[in-house]
Every structure is written in structure tokens, then in C-alpha cells.
Length: 192
Figure 1 (cartoon, one colour):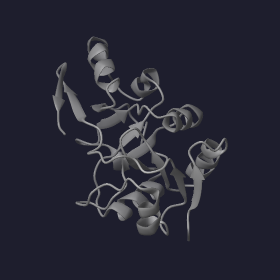
Figure 2 (cartoon, rainbow, N blue to C red; figure 1 turned 30 degrees about the vertical axis):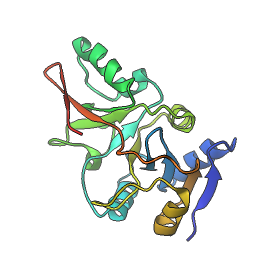
Figure 3 (cartoon, rainbow, N blue to C red; figure 1 turned 90 degrees about the vertical axis):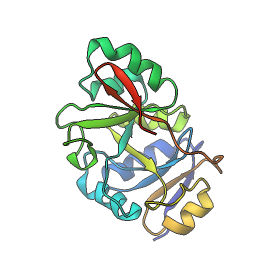
């Protein structure tokens, strides 16, 4: 199956993406750093599809459109809010304690208790997160151990038969992805 390819500027891009997510589909979408695989973060079938594509089983982060949305999925302490804002404003991922039943345990870290959250500075990410209002996974488009793909043509060639929708925003300049921090005892510790 060849995926549907839609430009990120298409007025129906978000609506088409939401329809795919609701059906357990896999989308590939642009962020401010890389292209990401996205599924409904509560859909175990869709999460398994990503795990098979990437040849790995490990935690995945989720995107949010704004700080308040991201924090509503976590058990952040009041005293840590300013630290979290600073990190999330810098296009980084922050790992926090997750609220129960917010996402599938299949994407949680550390004893199924932590969740990585990110607020990409990209219009498509903002729009899809705002409209879907459920956590959507974000993980680089690559097989485990390989470099992330940043060109829709390469993505389509390698993963085209295994994804349902590709949101095309052109080639994204090479990046290592977002920095990842974990919040422990009111300290932000850089992991990557």
C-alpha cells in the first residue's frame, strides 16, 4: 500500500491525520527537528505497528500544542512548573511522571510511570495536537540504530508500504532530534 501524501499546508492535512489516527493508523509528520511517526498514544495496535517499523520496543514521547495540555498528562509538582516551562520552550523533550491511563503502558518509561512530552514549534504539530487533544506519539522516522530520515522521498521509499499518511513539509535539515531531559527531585538532567 502506498501512503496518502498530503502537504503540511493543505487545509485538510489535520482532518485527514485525525481520521487516520482514529482508525489506528500510522502517520509521519514534520516537527521542528525531524519527521516523526505518530499514532494515538492509547492504541496498542498502532503502537505495535511503530515498534515493528523501528525494530524496537522502547518508550515514546508525545506531542502537545501548549504547556497546559502537556502538564495535564503528568503529575508535575507545583515547584517544578517553571523548570518544565523553560525546558519545553526550548524545543526539548521532558520526561515526567505520567498520570495513570493517559497513554498506553507500551510507551511509558521507568516501571510504566514516566512519559516524555514535547511541544514542537511547528504549525502542523500545534494544529494536530490542538484538534485531536489526545496524546500523539512522536518518535524519529528510522529503524533502530539508523539515522533519522528527513526527506519525504526517502521516507516514502523505505516506509511507504507500512504507513498510512505522510505529511510532506519538504526536506528538513539534518538534526539529531530534540534534547531530552528528565525531571528528578526538581533537577533537569539531560539524557540526550
